[in-house]
Length: 155
Length: 171
Image 1: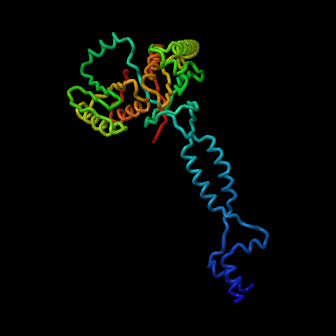
Image 2 (image 1 turned 180 degrees about the vertical axis):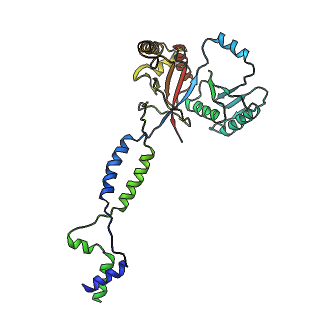
């Protein structure tokens, strides 16, 4: 018995073995975790705002004729890739790389347009009818990130 | 030799002393670790404002980096089989794809009904609740532009010109 005691003291050094009282911490955890689990949101939903070009085309075209200074860029999405059109800029077609769209190229061309017309903010996205919804959303994201927040979609 | 045996016993089982007294201590360290990680993760995903919008089961929204918060509007959901307006199934996707007509008749009548209701509410109460022309479109990520175009055209023709496309937010 003596040996054991002396051994114990030697092993533990100067500090006595202390035990934390974790009951309170555990209680907090047990209450907080179910509460947070109930209120946790795992899928956050956001929205993209989109205004349709108004249907009365007569009034619209008259308006467009008046403000000739607005630069409108057109982005066609088709099955083979993107075609970006901007006034007075020669831009090559961006073909798909295997199955992926050329997002890098699109970003570069948009930056080029933004560099030439810094105050231009309008872009019209014109997908062909087989394009999938998530592709359109990704294109809209890229346009917004490159500084074209006024996005319209035309069929 | 006997002493050495005793020594090894004490060294490797520090709990012996307690067990003899009739109490035992749980090894809580890893459990506390786990709880702490879980707590941090849950606090991160905690949202105080709650969700305005819920999505139906067979709907996979496309991902986007948009930060704009959803508004309280009527919801047109495009699932794999049905067009659902505010929880009521309206028309089957197959039927829309089959028809050549750009305008979806049943959706149009449903939307104009909703519009007249919200205009009615707008007249009674303050203009807070009235018709604003906002509509939320929850589209499955795989639908084609063909279908989307028809739905957008129908919404536009009933006066819902501001469309909010619901997306699932990514960081």
